Length: 412
Image (cartoon, rainbow, N blue to C red; front, side, top):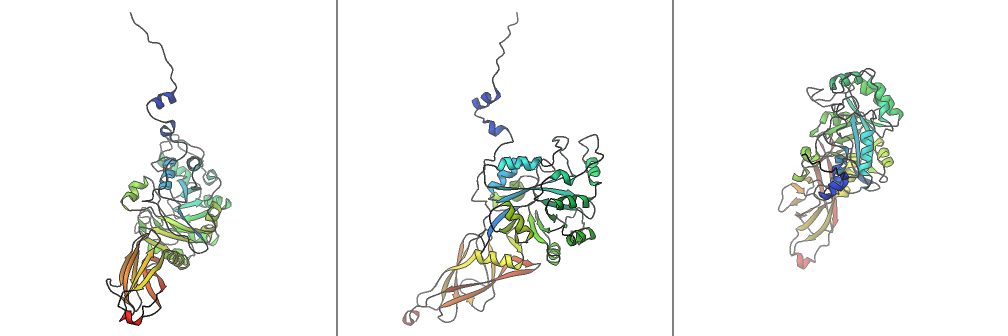
């Protein structure tokens, strides 16, 4: 005889709690729980008259060709101490569409906003316009509706047909997408024009499509650094055409995989100098081109922004003569995330160091300076080798300090 056990219905949540698993840890939705990790947070000082915000303007999730859910991107941003992050899914290239169908192209942004809602992280709406022709790839950020930037008239029946879907979507002229983004007041920039998949020699060249959009006020920036690559040719084009200098992670996998912050690495980001900490202020600063790129311990920007950042980052915090000598101990303090690589260009020479010194990030270095005589102030001129104001052109800084000479008897 078969004995039937009574059916018992236990809510899923009760089962999970009994197993020590919370509902929040099971579902990919809900608020991000990460906090800033001081060992990996990207930190630079405010410059005179402006706040310094750390921003990544180019990221991907599983809603296009990334491999993580939007909530993970938000948690990474919080750990890295970002002030803002843009969600910029490919509109036309949708390799996961068969597995994650989404007619609303704003969905990744909406999930990201929900994940960031219990933090002060600013989430910027954006999309990546994707073409194989001269238009290449472009990001439009601060858009209001991503759905208006794409039109697919004859999509393939099979949602797993990634190439077929891309070809159908890319048949809509790229200029239409740019115009639609411009109508929404978007800040638009040209992505990785040095990408060897589209430019085999990896050399950026201006073309008619982008030049026309610059003249029409529809292209405002260009990626000078993307992922692991910095392009001198792109840097030169940015300066020639007066475009905002953009540096991004363009992350598809985990930040920890691609940039290894646990080993001292960092994602490429923009330092954006704003009037206040808000999305509107970030947008205003981008259009005003108040940006510096932070890329693999290299700072890249126009002279006014680079000089302001160096002034806020480096200073002489202590200077005194060694007892019985005319040698001054000078302590240089660095308030930034960059290990500042300095070359002495002044006439003064050093005791323990040659002309090249490195002041560690958020640290200090004391050097013995030989002014040749007792004097009440010192000025040291340096080239900052890891701060570029143009291709192959380093920034310069002068550090000054008052110093009280000892009495003549003590000095002798």
